[in-house]
Each structure stands twice: as C-alpha cells, then as structure tokens.
Image (cartoon, rainbow, N blue to C red; front, side, top):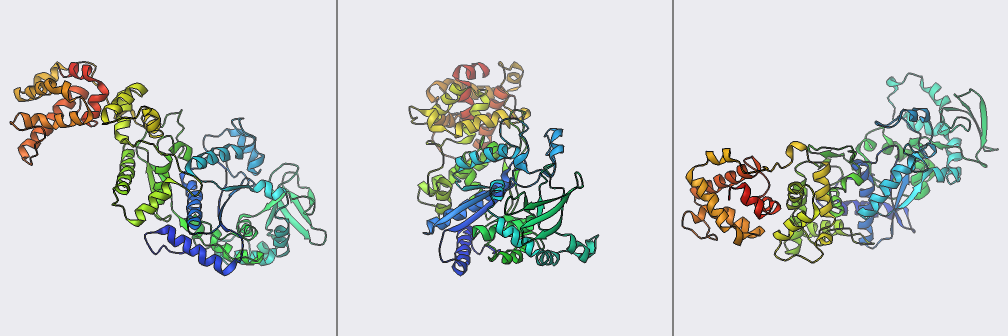
Length: 547
C-alpha cells in the first residue's frame, strides 16, 4: 500500500515499508523492486524518477543486509498510441502496432522501441543503475504469461466487475451490462495488419482458443494460446498480473497512478485474482526542465537523462533525485542558475570532508557517490562550475586556454589536469555551447574604449593605474582577488590584507568593480573578476585597461 513518509529520511521509510510488506507475504527469494517504462518516445527526466526511485530503494535494502533485485520492465509490447512531436508522418500508419515491431525512424536500430531503450540503458549505466532489463514483447511472445492470460479470460466477468466499481456510471455512454458482455481483458495483435484493432468474440477454455475479429478486414479468426500468444492483457490487468508473476514487493508510480480509480488502486483488487497482494508503493511527482536556455538543433532539447548528463555530472544528478522525497516535484535547472546546483553539491562535499555533515547528509552523499556494485563517475578535482563555464565562455571553449585559467586558479594543479576535471569540464563546455542564450554570453570589448575612459574621474583613473602597476606580481586567482578588493584599500593607506567594515570603503570597491567591467565587457557586472582576468590573459587585460 502507499505510505506517507514519516521522517526526513524517505529512503529509510520506503525500505521499512518494503520489509513489513515482504514479511507478511514471502518466506524466500529476493525482495523484488520493480519499475517499468513504455519506450514510446524520448524517455525523459520524469521517467527517470521511476527507475531511480526503484534503484535507490533496492540499494537501501541491500545496505540493510537483504537480497534485493531491481527488475525493470520495458513495455515495448504496448501499442503506438500517437505520433510524437517531430517524428515522421509515416509513423501514423503504425498506430495500433506494438512498439517492438515498428521500424526505427532513424534506421540505426532494429525497432522504434530499441532506439529509446538503448539510450536510456546507456544513461542508467553512467548513473550506476543496473537492473534486470525485461522486454515485455519477449515475455509475452515466449508464453511466459500464458497461464495468467488464460486465468484472466476465465474470470473476465469478475475482472470487469472490479474495474466497473471504480468507474463513474453517469460518464459511461453504454449501459453496464452491455459493456460487461463486450469486455475482454486480452487484446490480440492481428497477424494480417499487425494492429490491435481487434474485438474479442469468444473464449474456449477446453481448447485454449480465443476467437476474435479485426476491423482491418472484418474477418473472424482464432488463436490457440497453447501454440502462440499474439496479444497482451489490457493495462489495468497486465500490471497487477506482473506483480504476481514476478512476486513484486515494491514499485513506485506517478501521482496519477495513485489517484482513486487509477491503475494502482484498481490493481490492489485485481492482483488478488492472480494470488498475490499489491506491492508497497510510493507515488512520485513531476520532474521538469527549468531555466531559460538556448537549445540548438545539435543538442536536441528533450529533457532526457542523456541530455542532462551533457551538463550535469552523474553523481550530482543522482543527488538531485535523492535529496527530496519522491512525492515532491522539482525542476532541474539548465539555465543560468545551473551553477547553483553545483555550488550546493560542492558545499555538501566540503561539509562531509570537514566532518560537519549530519548522519542523513552523510547517507545521502554516500548514496549519490556509489552503489553496492561500484562508484559513480565524479571529478577527481572539484573546481567551481562557475569558474569552468566562465572560462569556457570567455575562451569560446578553447580547451588549452580553459585549462590555463583553471591552473591559475589553483594553488597546486595535478599534471593531468584535464583528466582530473572530468566529467565536469566537458559539462561546463557543453553547457556554454548548447544552453547559454546568445544574449547572456559574455561580450569582451575588442579594444580599449576611450569613450568610457573619458567618463572616468581622476580617482577612477588612479585606481586603474594602481591596479595595472601591481598586476604582474598578483597574477593568480587569489592574488587578483586580493588586488581587485585591495586597490581601494591601498588608496586609503591600508594594507591589501587589512580588514574593514567601513561603508565608504565598500562603496569604493563596488565602484572600482564597475569601472573594470565597463572597460573590459561593456557592462556593470559580469563573471567573477579573477576568472575574467585570467581568461583574458595579462597582455589583453593591459590593452583593454589602457595600460
């Protein structure tokens, strides 16, 4: 049954619910945690929450000493319901056919379903999600569900009555008894047209023969389930049937599945037909894509896990799902605020390293970094994402220049700096190239701006001169940071490292920042000045500042 999270540790709550559920129903075998997705189009970050939630609960159970299995069903035996946006028009001819039998529009994969399955499974591998992947087309066609299909046909009227209890009768166009007589839980894919435009006519249990007619030609046909399985159970029967077949102990689902009359609530009663009980269940909320971005044609733009990991390192993406209960909806920001997600993640890492993290923070951090099988990809060297994307922006993605900027930011850099920064380095470069809107790109003046210089007073010009005078000896991230704050101190007879809360000093510092930005990038603000200066190089800085 669905269960409210009672503590901040939603993983512990979920695992305890599974343990209690299994204790009442199982005496042997692994705890089965299931997820399922229909590969009918781009498998987005909302779909990932299905697989990620199941994976994380299974991992928590393993850490508690249980044998746990993550079983993921690919519902590739589902019918194509509509042509996705951007797909070729000829796919309309395949509406009603199983996803596994439709050609891949790109011609790269064996089927339409294979395209989306391959991409998602590759993304899951990077994220540390390793499941037992099950293709429902293979299961059905191999006869794995022959007995439960026949059981459903035997008890079709009883199953209809279960479904009817959740229907609002006044919304139905056909009277109850008429619907009951015409309803069948099994839908055949016609061997003539390949579609599920079929209508059940009769079921002969003694010969295991199902009689049906297809709208494509109006002919009546028969299929013997002892010889072949040409179709599948309708969804609200299929899902609980598989709970029983796989002995599922836990499975999450979207919020819509938990609403009255929806798949899970109906399934609680349906599954008893197959001799099992509904698994422990967690509803999950929407995951969307936030932030204003430029989505170039080369980058696509669909919010898939593969797309996300072009800009968000795998462990950070895991943490974004881990940090809040599944029921809470959230957006993953791919706009200008993407750096905040990195800053929060890095702040947690520092907190853990410094011994200041709470037990729950330690647990969440650990789950993000590794699974029971392996560690998840993280950079060996954590450099601020803001530094990296600013360097990528300022250098137009020139890798050697980017690395020079980063090296200048570090007190000590490893010999193989580029490798130590991956995958974050590629994420920052990719984000600037594919997501940063053109009007948010950093403009650098091509030459000294005498019109701006003429607007400066003598104090401003003296500040710039003092800055240039000391530039040579302060050319490092820390040195430049001290200098841009320190010029106003030096003008007041203070030392560079002297601290003061004098509001006049702070106003002078802000004024000096604006002067530098105006001369360098024709704006009052911009990227952190040390990063900007390092990315431009000392010679160009002197030229732009009139030195």
